[in-house]
Image (cartoon, rainbow, N blue to C red; front, side, top):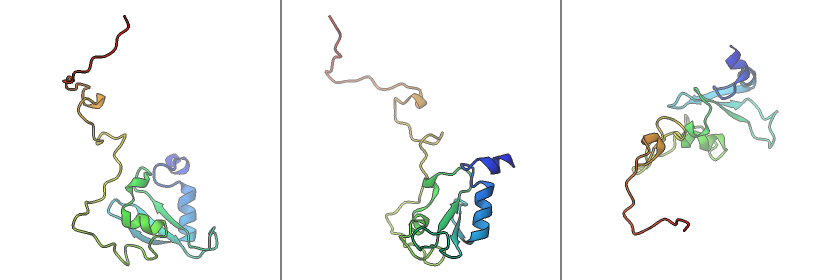
Amino acid sequence: MLKAIFTWWNGATLGQRFHISRRGVFVGQDEFGNRYFEARDNKDSYDDRKRRWVIYDGYAEASKVPPDWSGWLHYTFDEPPTEVPLKRRAWEKDHLPNLTGTVHAWRPKGAIGRGGERAVATSDYQSWSPE
């Protein structure tokens, strides 16, 4: 319960959930479990557009929002992906959230997270040393 009151990075605080449930309408949910809402009217808007919100499933990380929902959140698309799905091209890959800083992040050879061993330099470079 305390986590829901004080931590915004675990989805949404209790105050945010209350505000969104009172002022918003559920629009849809993506494949990551994030839930999207739109304001009933533009009463609390800054620019005469209905406000839009996302409540993350788990840790709040903006890269967890797929491109179609991101376009809707940023008013690029008027209709949500539940009504007008974004056309996928054959060459497009599935969306992946940013994995930097997680155990699933890519680590090149020689990275400390992979043991720190790297191949010996084979060039003719010699490091400078004071004489």
